[in-house]
Image 1 (tube, rainbow over the protein chains, first blue to last red):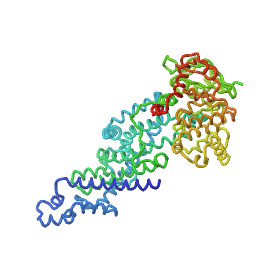
Image 2: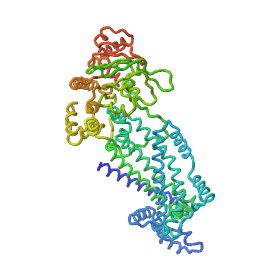
Image 3: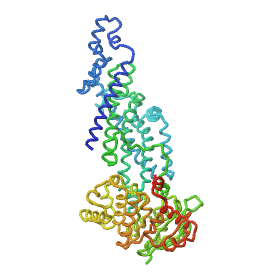
Image 4: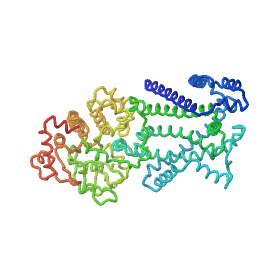
Length: 344
Length: 270
């Protein structure tokens, strides 16, 4: 396990380096010179050269790259071309909005999806289960911004309970106002996320319910419920960890999109304005941070899965158990032995 | 003393006309050994599952099954839970999928020990070691701490047998317990089952498609074809003078196995 952790950490570092260089060098292929636009139209060549030195863009690209990477290790994320302020401080302020937004959306989606996913699996032939499956299938097809617009229309315009958008200028100074302005975006992300999550959870649980070891436990005298507790929960946890890690990454990406629907000054809004203004330090920092976040969640998920499942411990490094969400296959229940015999 | 009576039992898929088994009747007394033999799809395995009331919800059973005084067909699930394990339990064909992949095998044996005999702590640990010894597994300490994937197929099947023994059942149902195993291991598991059933005074229902295997353990045979019992008699009698075409086919197949030379048998196995 320790050997695996070391190898996995090396892989994380390598992927992060690859991602950072991809982000950095791809952005440099864009045409244009930041120093030219910053120095202004009437600038003398000397002034432009001075601006280049100030920005560090007079140095070769690879030196700029290593400066950027090296700086990030001690919290220096560079200076925004536009505001001339440190990017790190601004990212910190934006994260104070985006992290609560995406994490509460993730938690809410989890709270909705687990009970519904379990019901959809256990009662898959009853109206309740079929209904849950049908609604969640529809939810998968709906774009997140559309849900946002509908919610604004319902709960900000038709029945004005929550603000249609924006976030208090003084941030969390008035926590109640801040929470109120996050309710609709959180619910929006959670609704869309739950739809996928319910399907994944349903399929993971259906798969477990058809496993032979549950039948073995029942043949030994465990009730179906006791067998599920004794053997089902732990086994279901393996694919569920993969699903949850994937959805946690998605929640951050979802926040980036939905912030622009609700005019919330989070990381997503900052990224978008960075892109529009060609503010390369801002864009590369945010893109890299999000990428690293996704990589790190995957790293944690891999470790947790190996703690749960001993079979994965000896396995190769890229092995992660992900269930097939779209599989509509019914569990075979006691019939495995019967069908398996044809092999012999 | 009759432990199990099956009368005119039929199993069918709900919403489908064709029955999977039809008119199955037999009985089993204390210490009896009964073999169910037939080809794939002849209904042997679902018959075994029906005896414990373990058929999936999509199947319906008609007729009577009386297991240790309990009507299996009319009983509630909670009544069935009370008789499963202690009255009758099962060893399945695939020892790998029959065991929980994430639980150390020692704990898997500890489950039924606690459930049926109230053993916990040191008493349970001692009994686990004793059971592992009885199924002839070496180094009980190491084995008990292993996960199923760390054991061989034969070792896994011994674990499954130890779990069944932990229940102290009156009837052991073995559903193709050797089919998934190597030929050499098959023989060992058969002798082990034979020994344990005798020592414990258990009754045995042994299910297979393999006549040479079954004739080593049981004295009475039921031959099944397409969900019906087509021949019923002593193992020796049936082999000496088979009446039904299906029985003759099984005997012919068994002869072929002994005649076919080593090389082509290997080709057939892979």
